[in-house]
Image (cartoon, rainbow, N blue to C red):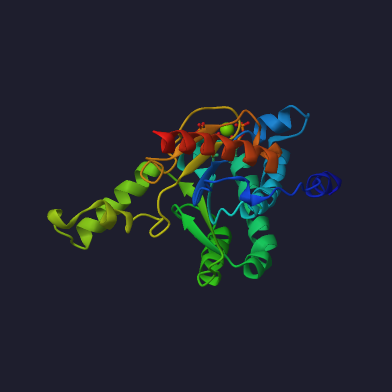
Length: 248
Ligand code: IPE
Ligand code: IPE
Ligand code: MG
């Protein structure tokens, strides 16, 4: 508990959101580096994931202060099933706790929760919590939080193809606009900025369709340390890119 208080009591530096000319509408975050963050402190990977989940609240608050209305978080990839069983179980327990803890906040803040991914193979209690949270927040409009949980980008595209064929829709009627409606992110639009923490510059099957035109930003900072200042740095890079484009 003491450890958790440390992170929730970090001072919040308020930054004016008018600072940036270009504010991404939709950002994606690949929250990587929990394990290495913990290792560097002599903690367990599970502790790393615990601090990682605690940091979600801080990151979402920072996004809101900058006027970002749609955030997609990479929580668990289909490739993550390859991890040790007890790490996966512990991770699922943490997720269930987060959903319970955040439910009331989502209602108060007007957050609509969307799930991208499959619930196949997910423990029934957790699957039920996800389904309920999505249903209960459906009418919320202030922010959208898209949770990529048991998500894989290629699987998402194949699923869309299957549903289009099943509809059935004729080949000539298939456009980018139509295709998008069959993705988990239907209606959310393109990802303008993708942030990856933990230093790797890999795409890891993260929304290949939606992020096709996005700006990719990688920071060596591990996810539990990613704060408002870090987000600000990412937004600076995003603005440098768009300012340069606008001069051409
Ligand atoms: C990211 O942290 C969280 C998930 C992928 C679930 P990692 O667990 O990948 O941490 P590192 O990359 O090993 O440090
Ligand atoms: C990417 O992190 C997936 C999530 C952040 C959930 P990983 O640590 O699983 O990275 P890769 O797939 O090995 O690159
Ligand atoms: Mg990793």
